[in-house]
Structures are given as structure tokens and as C-alpha cells.
Image (cartoon, rainbow, N blue to C red; front, side, top):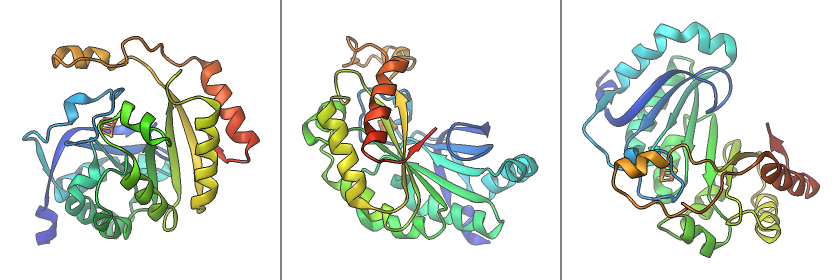
Amino acid sequence: MKQFNVVGYYHSKETFGTVDGKGIRYVLFLAGCSLGCAFCHNPDSWARGDKTITVEEVIADIEQYRSFYESSGGGITVSGGEPLLQSEFVATLFAACHKAKIHTTVDTAGFYQQDVLDAVLAHTDHVLFSLKAVDSKIHQYLTKADNKQILKNLAYIAKRKPISLRYVVVPGVNDAAEEIDALADLIKKIGGDVKVELLGYHTMGVYKWKELGMEYKLADVKAASKEDVQKVRDQLEKAGIEMQY
Ligand code: SF4
């Protein structure tokens, strides 16, 4: 039972999550992220902070609502921040979840060394992978890093687990026809069970940047309309990519 005392640093938790994986889910948002996405709606999750939770506490939380998760085909999703920055905690938590027959999903952006993946994937059922851009320059504009390691990690995961590839359509930034063609080519190249989930860029998190006194780089970019997202969907479908709705 010693492993149950492994501690995770977290930002917040949700007991009835419906947008981060299948069914109704317990969603634990871990704290800490170094990717610095320009459209992040949780910049307050970048610092690790001092709120902690143990594996034992998470399992006890889940047990209270287990019937909802089970009857809806749900489970637990560990999101962030970047959860893989606390890979030991996630690996221990997911092992405990599997022991308790709870479905596990991790929501990651892929920005870390590959050697942290195996321990987590060993007890992961499903991966939500958030890719910001395929073109390295666009990626560097939208984040604080290039995407070399991220793309390597995406390919590595695709060989091992089913992925919902989340792509935020940022109008005029990462939705040009050539960028979406590159996305389709990438998905075909990496193989595996990858479905694309499109999300429209929105501005609901901008107030947090203001509260934190941080400059919001995309201030002049409009939120994505239904048509903006549909245009990308049509192009991907035409290219034979499987979509998730
Ligand atoms: S990876 Fe997620 S939490 Fe980290 S900066 Fe990007 S959107 Fe925010």
C-alpha cells in the first residue's frame, strides 16, 4: 500500500467531466506545464503550486461516484497542465485504477522526454493528444517550443495506444490548407488508431492572462466559427482521416 502515498501536484479536479474522454469521468488536472501555449485557457496551471493529492485520495474520490463512471463507460482522465511531467504519480495512479477496474485516459501535449512514457502507457487505455501545429515555425509561434520531440512522442504513442488527436483550429494561424494537408499526411504516416477531434479556438481564458498580468499574444485573432472548424473537418475527411465528434 506504500505506493498509494505517491503525491501529485494538482490544479483542480472535476467529478462529472464529460468532455475529456468517453462517458462520465473523474478529471484530475495536474499542475505544471512548460509548453506555454499562446491560447492556453489555464495559464494558472503552469506553475506546480502546493496543492497535493495522493493516489489513495484519488481512488477514494472515484469510489464515491463509481456507478456513474461505470454505467456511462467512463473512468478517470488525468489532464493538466502537462500530466507526464509527473509521470511517476500518473503511472502509480493508473496502475491502482486498473487494479480497481477503472478505465484510464491521459490528456497530454507530448512535450517531455520519451523515457517517461512506458511506465504511464502500461496502464493507460486511451490517450488524448493535443497537437498545436505540424509546421515547426507555426508551432513555435503558438508555443514556447518546436515540435520535434512532441511529434516523436506522438508517433511512439500511436504504435501502442488509441489516440484522440486534439487540434485547436486557430483561424489564420494553423488552419491553412497546406497545414491541414500536413496534418493528414502525418496521421497517415504514424499509423495506429488515431482519430482527430477538432476544437475551435476560443477566447474564454483570456481574462486569466489579464489577471496574471501576462501579455496575450493572440489578442487580434478571432474565435473560430463553426464554418472555420467545418472547413478543416471537410479537408481532413476528404483526405481519408477518421474524425471524432
Ligand atoms: S500544454 Fe495545455 S496546459 Fe500546457 S500551455 Fe499548452 S494548453 Fe496550457
